[in-house]
Every structure is written in structure tokens, then in C-alpha cells.
Amino acid sequence: MVDEKKSEVSGVLVVDKPIGMTSHDVVQIIRKGTNIRRAGHTGTLDPRASGVLVILVGPAVRLSEYVSASDKRYQAVIQLGTSTDTFDADGRVLSTTAVDITEKQFNDVLQSFVGEIEQVPPPYSAVKVKGKKAYEFAREGEEVDLEPRMINVYNLDLLEWAPPEAVIDVYCSSGTYVRSLAHDLGEKLGCGAHLIGLRRTKSGRFTLRDAVPLRKLREAFADNTWTEVLIPAAETLSDWPVIDLTPEELDIVRHGRRIPGVAGIGKMARAISPEGELIGLLEFDAGTNEWQPKKVFTSG
Image (cartoon, rainbow, N blue to C red; front, side, top):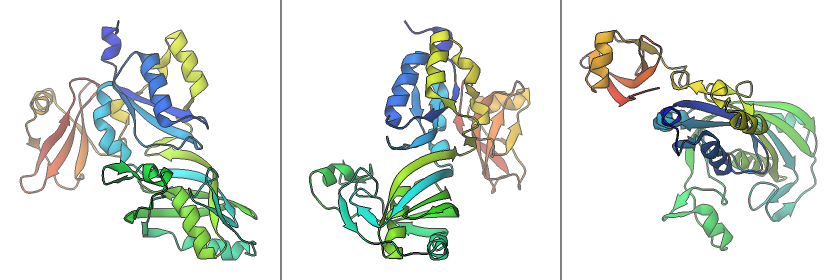
């Protein structure tokens, strides 16, 4: 039987996902451990990847579209000289080429991917094509033309140069495929490349410092102390401006009605109660100088 008090819990669990598990596996463990069905991640990490996986629990799942759109940071290990059909080490080798590239040549080409660029998702990805996921076509041996998408790569740093391997730091927009970046980098260098290691170090405002190893989280579920590592929903979008509601405004926003605003704060903001709870997400209407509630939360 679901604990009534627990069913009202709302917030974020930031997990350091281990290699070998799917993101859905982690969500299932959290649903079982918290006894709360409403839980979901905000950006898939491949089974081969580890690192920051943000799980929204309870009413906080309604923040998903905003948290999912947050920027990401990764540490990626790329192997030069070999290309695969999946763009990672799980795939079938398509070509093998000798690597005769200097560190400067590698870094020069690497920096050419910084900025707003077009990127084609990997064939083995969850991108939908004609109602099916791209990897379903790929597994059946069918080729599909995946549309390129615009992404932002804010920064690329070469951390370690040990050819044929290179370790890079990737700071990018949501929707960026690091596997595609590795593949495209290899194509541009003329030697081919694929991704052999990936660790997400940041997702939105959450870093590895916020992340709890899954093993420790399981222990917290067993001890019933997991709420101690639950991050309040109000902190989820901490880079957004805050509108501190008066008791009168609190009632107005909870009923989905507008409150007066002032230009210059930002287009979107968090509405916070006098007790520090996240009450809603507001959008500024420049035409009327008012905040319009976009999402309202009854609790958390």
C-alpha cells in the first residue's frame, strides 16, 4: 500500500548512474524504492555511459520539459582510426585507418565543432522516424535518412592526448549526441573515430557533486533515509529568476491567474511561496507587464 505522505513527496534525485544499466532501469529502482509511481528521468544516458542522471519524483515530474532542455557536460573518450556503424564500441567496424595526426591537428579540428552546428543523430538512436525509433530500422538492416538538427556546442577541451585515444570535455546543449560528435570528428580528420567512453559530469545545474551513487541510494531506500538526499523542486531550475509571492499573490497564482510584473527580470521565472516552496512557473507578458502562470503545483 502506498504511503500517503510519501505519495506527496516532490523533488529531485540526482543519481550517478553506473555503466551497464539503462536510464529506465534506474527509474524503476527509484519507483520501487520510494513507492512513488510518478518518477522519470530528464535525459537518457546510454547503458555504456555513466554519470549524472536527474530523476524527478512526484509532482516535480511536471518540470520535465524544462529540466530536459538544460545544457549538459560530458567527459568523452574517443578512439581514432576506427569507425563503427553505431558510432561507439558496441557497433560493427566499418573502417580501420592508420592514425597520423598531431595533437595540434586534432585540437584545431576539434575546435571547428564549437558553436551552433548541424548534427545528424546516430543511426542507432531513439529518434523517431515514421513512428518507429531509428535503432529499430537499423537493427532490421534498413537505412533511414535522419534529419540534421541544430545544436549548440559551447566549449570543447582536449583533456588528454594519447593516440589513438583522446579524452575531451564537451559542454553542449540538450539533444547533442556525443557519439555523432566523435564520428564526425573522425570523418573530418580523415581517419575515422568512435566513442569508447562517456561520463556525464553535469546536467543543468546538477553536477557529479550532487549525484548519489546508485549503491548508496539503494541503501538509503532500505534504511528509509532517501528523503535526506532528495533535492527540493524549487532548486531544480535555480538558474531561473525567482518571484517571491506575497500571501495574496500565492492564492492568485494557485488559481492560475496573472500577477503584476516588471520588465527586465526575464521571460520565465519560478514562483516561490513565503515558505520557500515552488508554487509555479511563470511566463512574462511584455504587452501587459504581467506574469502568467504556465504550470502550477499544489505542493512541492
